[in-house]
Length: 186
Image (tube, rainbow, N blue to C red; front, side, top):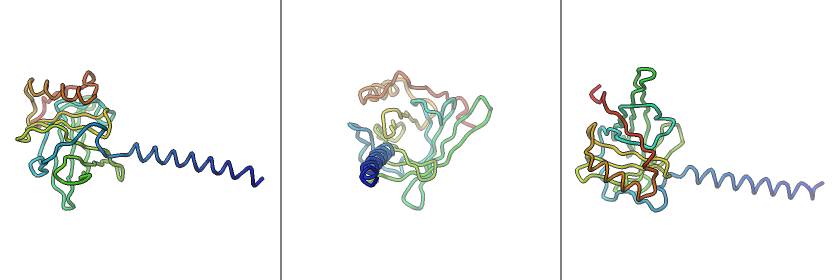
């Protein structure tokens, strides 16, 4: 009996190890392979409200319009993130409050953000206007992409340039959701 259990125990350990490695890899907060976050980043200039111009859709934002994100400095070297969007199906505003911390040096726009307890996802600014008027943000894989602006509208030329850059980076830009910003002042 002892000989039979030892190989089974070793197999269970091997399976558990593979599962744990997969779980740790899935929870990475680093930028996708081949994508570099902006360097020379100034978090103080990034603070304030940003309007979501476009996104790759996910369940946590599905159906929301007039989405914005507000960033505030925290006392622990991190940022508070307040996401807000309008749900027309219920005629209500929905919001979520999270926290973000740099993955490394604070002049590299690579952060990890959490809205759900100890679970963090990647947040990487990969394109940024020199005046901090628009930004393109990606997650830890190529299914997360946001185009943000300091104003509810963004010029067609900037949108086209960012979409072309996202396409070159391997994102499925044909699936972008263009977010209406008709309630921006509310």
